[in-house]
Amino acid sequence: MSNDSEQGKAASNAASKAEPKSKSKPKPMSAKPAARKKARRFAVQALYQWQMTGANLTDIEAQFRADNDFKKTDTEYFHMLLHGIPSCVNDVDAGFEKYLDRDKKDLDQVELAILRVGIYELLKRLDVPYRVVINEGIELAKTFGATESHKYVNGILDKASQAIRMVEVRAHREKNKPKT
Image (cartoon, rainbow, N blue to C red; front, side, top):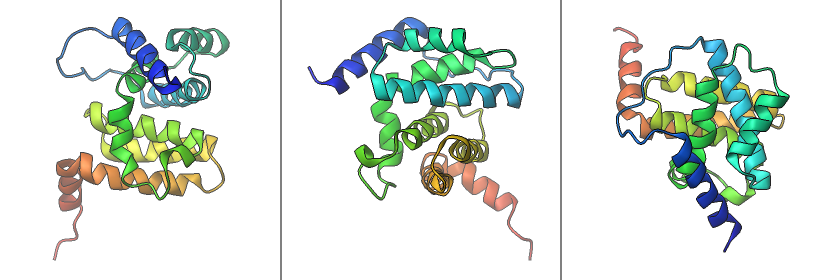
C-alpha cells in the first residue's frame, strides 16, 4: 500500500470519528477573529506535521493541545481544519493545482499546508468571506513561508477564489466599482 493511500485512509478514519455524520451546512462558529487566526496558525503547523510524517491526526492534535497554549484559540475551528482537510485532500488539492506553475510535489510543504487551509475554507466554509481567506493565507505565508511565498500564495488563492466563489467575488467587485 502506498504512503498516500495510507495517509488518506488514516485521515478518513480519523475524520469520520471526529466529525458528526450530519450532511447539513456547517454552522458559523461564533469566535473572535483573533481566535480563528490562532486556530489557522496551529492548523497549518499541524497539517505540515501530518504531511511530513503521515502521523495519526488524533495524535497530532493531542500533541498540539499539550505543547501549545490554546487559550484564546477557536479549538473547534482548529479541530475542523485539522481533520476536515485530510478527509477531502484530493478535492482540496484539485481546487488549486490548475493554478500552480509547477507540480504539486515540487511545492514547499509550508506553502502546501497554507494553500490547503485556504482552499478548504473557500470550498467548505462559506461563512468565511473569500477576502478573509486570501488575507489569512498571505499572513500565514509571511509568518511561516519563504521570503516571497506570500506573493505566490496570494496569486493562487486569488485565482482559486474567482473560480470557487465566483458569485461572491463578482458581487464584491460590482459593489466596489467606481461610479461613473
